[in-house]
Structures are given as structure tokens and as C-alpha cells.
Length: 505
Image (cartoon, rainbow, N blue to C red):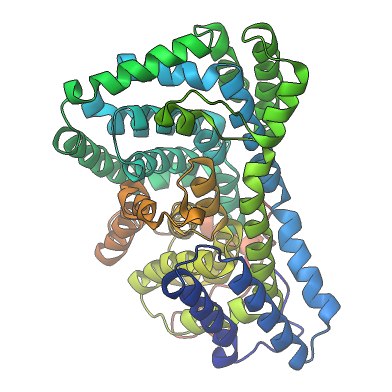
């Protein structure tokens, strides 16, 4: 977070002005014009924020530095996007994705598919420590299986997102799981343990909904048997299936289990996939380069199969990368001009009880996600601003680290112009940017993501699973020379220490 102690923050009205104007432009673009390209409204929002800063006496070079700083912090995530685009194209060519689709269609029961998809994504994400890597690999294959079963794309996407982002939330390898406790000054494993009271019920609720939906929504298997048979037969005809094509996926998971960094692990999957594509599937080296760059391409004459397999490549991620760069720049401008801090301070100065503080922390992390478009800011900024309140009230900041994960990590994929939402839409081929707004239904159907914050607010009101500060906590606060606030005075916030930048690679 930028140090604002040497400058005057804008008033609440001024701080809200660029936010309200930008959200208004987004609403105009999305809902009035029906055009899902939020890039230009966000560019205008960045310009408005920069102009506000300049009019208040800040130098443009300082604002620009804030913009580039946030983009720099998030470059590892952009790198993952590029590698995931390569993986999708190359793994289709290597037969990895077709093999997963083939065995999924032949072995899975359509009625339990949604529940199985959520569980599988949760396990893989827990192992990899990256929700994006899970969505861009296993998630792509699951979308193909769901399409073969005739399940609407938004239902499948909802189950994938629920599992992938929950596995990411409690994985010790995850960047956000490390960032939240680092910002709030708690132990990572204590942080993970304290998230279980909201994580487990939310997963069980989602699992129950997907089971009920599977048995009540999906047509009997024999009505889609002909389509499934057609797809599997064509996959057998066009690809050499079996164990060997699965080795790239097994390699990536194996490297993750040995706690290797996600980015090199994913790229190793690209290299092995390219080798198998050449020696097992018979494609040329130049073809592998093309699939990694522009995506896989095939014309089978069967629309369902072509839709499943014609995707991937670095270029398929450029829409998302450009959106992320702009959204991150907007968030950086809001942070450097003090607008985000002024808004959060206005909230902090008005909360008087633990229930209000905890609920406000969750909502603030979510709102920062909406405005700034970046899950890291939505964790780091509220985590720093709210920490003294918890300490002054005698509550452990484990409550705060959980709140920022629920409002930050879990809600990120449910905001289409956020980094997480833009990636999900692109990687899973939801077609939102082509005007297929129906697939936005994946947002309410990602039950595990939005039920956890609701459960967290319930705990805040009832006091359940809301740990008080321990003697060890108090000793650590005293050692760090942190200011312990009195509940009656919120005018001095102190500083919980410098936030560590998330490095997901």
C-alpha cells in the first residue's frame, strides 16, 4: 500500500467521484449498449482518477508510478495467463484434453458430473496452489465433458469455479493464501485452519446443490447417448488416446506435489505436451508453435466437437490480458491518489462493534475487487487498514485474514472485469465478449464462492468461530510496536507493517 501519511487524502465525496463515474460508464456499456467490452470505461476511469490527483496537486509521474507498481506486482499472474493459453492449445494437440474428455464421457455419470467436477477442481487446485492453472487445464476438459452431457455451460463453469477457487483459498502454495496472513500478521497455517469453519459448510452447500441439480436438471443419459457416442468415436478417430497423452497433466500435478513453483511447472507441461503432440499424435514442430501461439484448430464437420477443440493459444488470452492491464492500472491510480484509502477510512471510522468490523472487512474487500479489478489490492489494502481495529477490540487478526480471503479471493472470479473473472470467462470459453450474456449465470451458480462470505457475516453477528486475541498475539503486537486502538477512538489507525507483494509464480 502506498504511504499516504505525508499528503492529505481527498474528501469522501472526491474519492467516490471517479469510482461512481466509472461504474456508471461500465453500466452504460454493459447493460444499455449490451457490449461486454469494459476496457474503454475503465480507461476513462483511470484518466478521471489521474486528473483528480493532478488537480489536487499530485504529480502525474507519481500517479503513473502507482499505476505501473500495481501492474508490476501482478505480472506473475499475467505470466500464468500466457502459459495457460499455451497449455490449452498444446494439450489439445497432444491428446491430453481429448483423452480427459473421452474418459470423462465414458466413465462419469451425468447426474453426478457437477459435484464430481467441483471436487476434482478443488483437489487439483489444492495441489497446484493456483485456481487459474486449474481452470485453464482440468477446467477446460471438464467444460468439454459437460458439453458432451448436454449440461449448460454456465452450470459447469459454476462448479469448476467453486472447486478451483476454494482449493486455491486453502492451499499453502497459493499466493493469496500467503498474502492474507502476511498482511495481517498471522501464521499461514493458523490462517488456513481458521478458514475451515466457512470453507467446509460452503463446500457442502455447493455439493448438495450440484447433486440436486444433476438429478433434477440433466436429461436421462439415454437421451444424449447418441451425441456422446458421436463425440467419443470422433475423438478416437482424430487422436491417439491413452495413458501417454495424460502424462503432461500428471507431470504438472507431480511437480506441484513436490512444491515446485506453478509457472515453471505449467511450462514443463507445455514442453512435454509439445513432445507428445509430435511423437504420439504426428504433428510437426511448426504446428506445435502455431497451437501454442494461436490455439488448436480442427474441422471435423461436427459442430459440438469443433466447439470443444478449437481454442487455446497465447492470442486467446490477449483480450483478458489487455483488460487486466487496464483494470490494474485503474486500481493503481485509485490507490496512489488516496481514493481507496479515503473510502476505507470513512468506513473504518464509523464501525463500532466486532460484527460491524468483520462484516465491513468482507464487504470492503469485495467492493475493492469490484472497483480496483485486482484480488491482491482487495486483500492488501483492507488488511492493512482494518488490522488496528481488531487489535483495539481484542480480537485476533485471523478474523481479518479470513474476511479478506472471502471478499477478495473468492469473489474475484464472480466480477467479469476483475482479473479472476476475465480469466475464467476467457479460459472456459464462455463467449461473454461475443455477447452471450446468458453464460454470466455462472456467477450465481458458483455457490461455494459467494456462500462463504455470507457464512462469515453470520459468524460475525453471532460471534461463532471469531477468535479473541491470545497472549501470544498481544506479545507480538507489543514487540512490533503496534498501536492498540481504543474502541471509542478510530482516528489513529497505526500501521500493521508493510504488505508483502504476492508472487504466485
